[in-house]
Each structure stands twice: as structure tokens, then as C-alpha cells.
Length: 321
Ligand code: AHR
Image 1 (cartoon, rainbow, N blue to C red):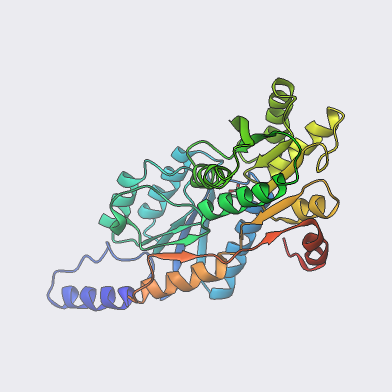
Image 2: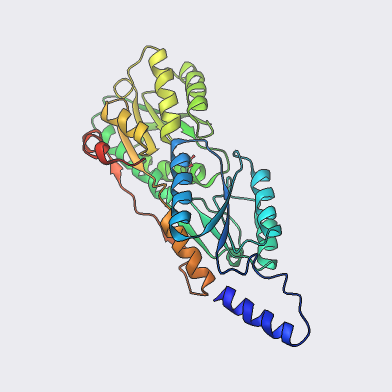
């Protein structure tokens, strides 16, 4: 409808001799062009998310302009500005951090290009700067991780000392998974977070940070990693320290990508909270609805579950990512 109304408005202007419809959406061939500014390629989750979005765009007949910000906000802002300059029909992006988006979102709004947030939220007070936000409830994910630990700690003879590997500082999943977990473990004073540090959602950093934190806190007997990749890196550090992951150190992660699920089925991880990267089809549907002028919900939640070791063994053969 937006495209149709733009064309009618343009026609009227031309008829009235006022031409100059350059401000409308980029191409007049009826094809939708989406500019997508991805966070990066930091994790197995992100790779699966990118693939899913690219495949969904193709299936929906949407032309996708894709950029990888390498986990840097300034790169994402540059990409969004370039999509505005190219007059794409719609912009979607997964914000690397929560803050600092108002200016560029206003620029998109002034250019009449609707924006959809995928996977991660922004903390803008003005919610009219974007159409909708599709993604997980990260606070709930953190809570599920904490609740599992509270139940598991019932059998623990002594203190439960947790090392937490956080995702990128300032990102919505790091903020929310930390908050949800802290909220849940309040239920048991025996559980204490002895160290917590940013490991950037990557395997390499997960290993490096775990090495340092475990040296400083040999009393740790639980690892909570905000994603599978950091957990998998930490497993290498735990093994190098001569300990058995999943036994000497209980491990809880978030995502449930294939590598994480394999480590869970092998007994090296104890519990995984799922975070689904398969947002592509819903994103393309929402984009079409927005461009048709239809009302869309401001928040679209992803459906997710959790996995124990036994459940991982059963789910692995059909795991797509
Ligand atoms: O925003 C989703 C998170 O970002 C995933 O949990 C993590 O693996 C990714 O890098």
C-alpha cells in the first residue's frame, strides 16, 4: 500500500506539473528491496541467522542488500545510512548494542523508510522510530538458565560458585540474560556469581576469558555462558586445566546450535536454553505487511524451548543448524 500510495501521489504530482518523485522508494518495478544490517559472524547462531534471512528473502522474492558490521555499531550505522541513500523500501537490522540509535532511526523515518528490528532490541524511548521488533525474550532465557541451576543446586553439598561469560557489553542479550539469571538465582543464597566478564559471544574469547577467570577462581564449580560458542571455548580451557566439563564444572549455555547440542549430548554441557536464529520467514512476512500498510504487532516473540542432555540426544539428528 505504501508503494501503491506513493505511485498515486507521484502520478498526481506529475499531472499537476509538480513532478520530482525522487523521494519515493528506490525502484518502481514493484519489487521489494530490503537493506539488512547484520551484527557480524561472531557465532554459530549468527551464521545460521544470516543463512536463514538470505534464504527467506530469496523465497519471498525480496531483493536483499546485506552488510556485516563486524560487531561494530559505527559500521551498522554506516550501512543503514547507505541503505537510506540507496532508497531501499525497508530496512531491517539486529542492533549490536541497545543504545545510540535514535539519530539514524530518525534519518530513516524522515526518508519514509520503515525499519524492523530483528533479534535484538534498542532502548529508544520513541517507539515510532521502528515498526516492530521480532526476536527472543532474553530475560526469560536468563531466567530459565537460573531456574535450572536452582533446581540442580538442591543436591549440591556445598557452595555453588558461578563464573559468568557475558555477551558483548551493552548488547540486549548480554544485559537481559544476565538480569534474568540474577533474578532466578536469588531463590538460593548458596549460589554466588564469583566472576563475570565480557567474552564477546565468540569461542576464542570464551576460551581466553575462562582461562583467566578459572585461574583467579579455582573454587568455581559452575559456568554460565551467554551463548554456546563462549561455552565451547570455555570447555577447552576447562579441559586444559585438567578438569572435566559437565562434571567438575557444570555448564549452562544459551542458543542450542548443533555444536552446543553435540557437547550437551556428550555430557560436556549440562543444560542449554534455546534461542532460535530462524527469523527469516517471519521477517519477510512482516516486511510485506508493513509495506502493504497493514497494522503489525509492535513485538513478535520467537518460540523457544530448553534442552537437557537426554533431550539433546533425541533432538540432534533433526537439528538444522
Ligand atoms: O542476539 C543473539 C545472540 O547473538 C546469540 O545468542 C549469540 O550466539 C549471538 O552472537
